[in-house]
Length: 111
Image 1 (cartoon, rainbow, N blue to C red):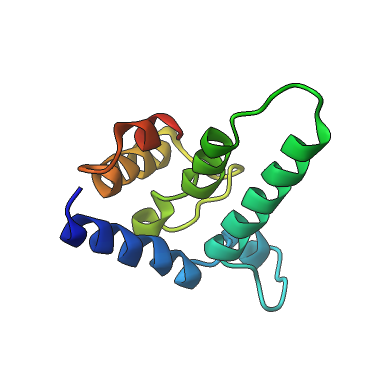
Image 2 (image 1 turned 120 degrees about the vertical axis):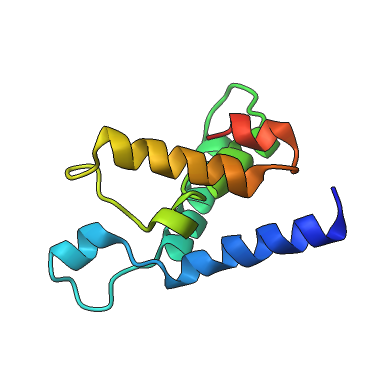
């Protein structure tokens, strides 16, 4: 992967700091969490679970899944499951595929 491609991905990933979790917004929660904070929390929770199970865990794969699961929302915004349509799901998947183009194919499989 080129340095330019890596930096473009990093810029999009970092933009998740500006995407508010809409479930919190819809519920009127003051100071709602953003998607970047949610993603960090999911990654830490995944590590905690992996450390607590007896079976061997592919931590690299687990972290790829945790860190990338909402990457499409950098372009589509956060749409809560209770109002997410098939079209919104498809748009988020297409955005994620585009954001991850030119990066390790394993990352797209983590979605």
